Length: 231
Image 1 (spheres, rainbow, N blue to C red):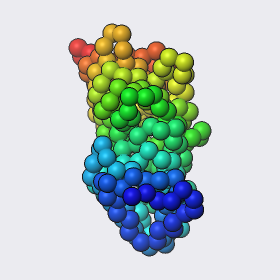
Image 2: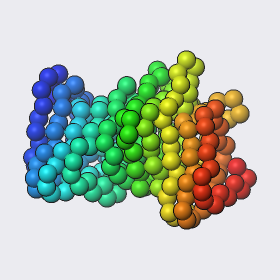
Image 3: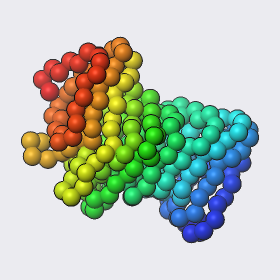
Image 4: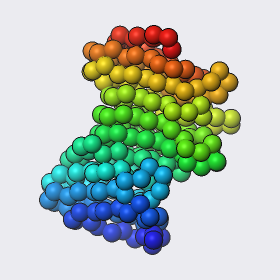
């Protein structure tokens, strides 16, 4: 089931995504003035959404369960309560626009081909829970342009590329700026695995490095305690 290729659906009540829903190239505009809930299908590997725009003049949008999308995701206005939800972004030349906060975020290409995901210029996507880079297939996922502010743990679950790949320069950045303790876990090998630009800027708490982290991108320490352990 897909949404037709043209036009928009203005959702002013609750929205529920089934894990068998395949998205489409239309758009859902979440514009209700009262409280709304967007409930995902619960799967990290199936189900999709069309383009999403959050543009609420009143009320709170609550995110629930696991929401998965390979389309554009835009925050324009409104309060978002991410709770314990997870948003899975599948890179597909899609763009995240508008600075806002989500709980757990997973970037998972789930393809044998290389794809990019762009954080729009001037946008900071804040991840208050766990940021996971985990391609469940073999293609690279290049993160471009804007900033992901990781305030919880960061896990790179494989040795694929999330930074620059052959013929592709990654321009995105992961800013590690949580005020509590954080762990940055890598699964790279000596010859494979790459990260986007990394900046460590912690006003408190300790960043613990774990596993093998590999990068050909910029690595910047601005502030904060780093415990490198046996990494």
